[in-house]
Image (cartoon, rainbow, N blue to C red; front, side):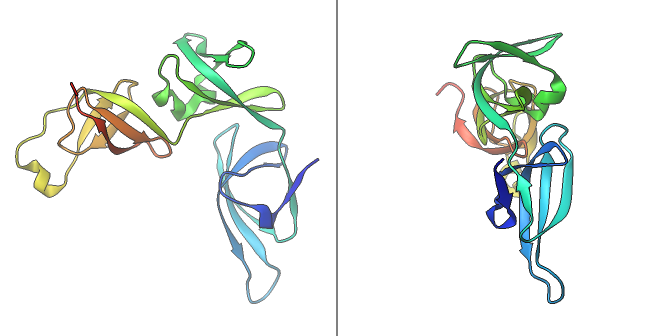
Amino acid sequence: MTMYETRDFRRGLKIEMNNDPWVIVDFQHVNPGKGAAFTRTKMRNLRTGQVLEQNIKSGDKVAKPDTEERNMQYLYRDSEGYHFMDQANYEQISLTEDYVGDTKFYLLENSVLKVLYYQGKPIACETDTFCELKVVETPPGVRGDTATGGSKQATLETGLVVSVPFHINEGDILRIDTRDNTYADRVSVRGK
């Protein structure tokens, strides 16, 4: 079994603790004046989404989880859940909304994303850091409002609602940061 020491920690590293897969969100090596050095670790459970902060003594080892990422194509959603097809062997799976989480806001038919398997079972979906989506509804900007640097709400084609600058219009394609569901920039203007 592969093990990681605290010196191997980095953001995004997947580890196993208490028979659960976790991903390191943030960490800090701490060397207090008194006592042993440790690593303050913030991690997210890949199955439940729970975020936990834990101190791990320097030199302690944690296991590498039995995980695998597979490229899968999103097909459709129905009452059973979200349906995906494995790009390698064309096997189809269905995931409930609990497993899909906020990734549902970035699922467009035929788009390809990563499905994370733990011990041979699918547990989560992961999309790229940025996703391009079309604005389907937003109020028009009022002339003169741009000086304040304010924002308005825009509904995107997947149902996600984000705050956008006043110059954004219906039909524009926006780049959205999937880590925090926020507007990054405008990719193209409607009709161009």
